[in-house]
Length: 453
Image 1 (cartoon, one colour):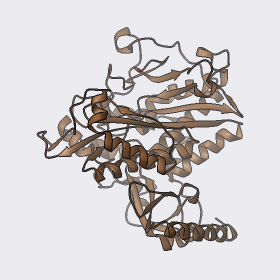
Image 2 (cartoon, one colour; image 1 turned 60 degrees about the vertical axis):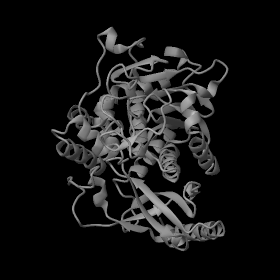
Image 3 (cartoon, helix red, strand yellow; image 1 turned 30 degrees about the horizontal axis):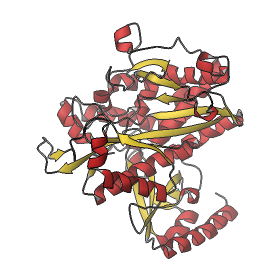
Image 4 (tube, one colour; image 1 turned 90 degrees about the vertical axis):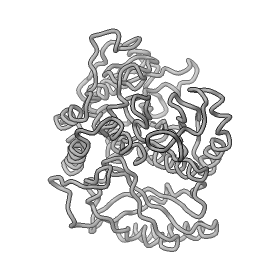
């Protein structure tokens, strides 16, 4: 950032700080998400917001090789005690937190001390991929579904927790049992100007899902962070734990973080109105074929934890097979045609991603895979109907973290898109977590990870 630009940003930040102070906001949480999927934070008093915008806040780059348990590894470019970065908040995303009175939030971009963009900044990565699409006249609209399980302390389970109600999967009884809590979740998100599309019970006891309106790739990842932390704050105010881990109890359906996306050229949704499969345009079909082709490697980003593979099992609507199908919730890539008269609603859903994923890595990598599909003229295979586990002949996605890492490290598309510093840091974290949890039982793995994200 050049000096005149810094000065303008500082002036804008002073105005924002005055506004926040008038609203009773005392501090601002500045977040980024590391390669293990943990949202990390530095906070500043509201009066220091302008200083943070102009000069950034110091933070070690070593967090890019932290593991879920807060131990760390090293990579060829990142690791150890040396170095410092500057965290610069994005004022455009500054949000007063309804679930945390007296607090505001903003995501950060990370820079070197001399002002150069930090090569391993995950938010910067998705920004670059969105810019690549824009150079071709394309834009993406994306949105995450956030799933979580709420639990109360003092229960009979091995970990001392229990679901706060007995309502059945997707049952109204579960809404009635927790109606005050769910109302407060909705109110908090609405107060933060987050457009909620749906909020409903899910399959596992105590599990819920919230879907929010689509945004651009960076904005979608920002929203994923904001939604999660809002749910966490409201849950804590109700004496509940919000658990976002891939699995919260062995042998149960886990928490997904499904990514919906649509591809646009100008005001035209390329997911419909074409001659391709299910009415897609040829460009959209090639984009989705590129995503499908890279899914085995993308799994190391979208389902990154060893616990992810306890969730990613056949016949659980988790997307364990590398196939696609219209409205097929067992396929890893589900195509959603939408109502015939709602052109903006046609989209695709990547179902194999979960709550351990860094949303910035996911959105950026999916764009990179899709653009590579367009470049190479990738072709979608025939769609799959029904459960691919029962039909035979369909490729299973990697069924272990080591297998997913192998596909990731062999992906030329993802290496080029991420760049070596970020790519190697991700790979080092995956190796570290594989080693860290080697030999752990399913119960040990679940208990170590379910509350970390």
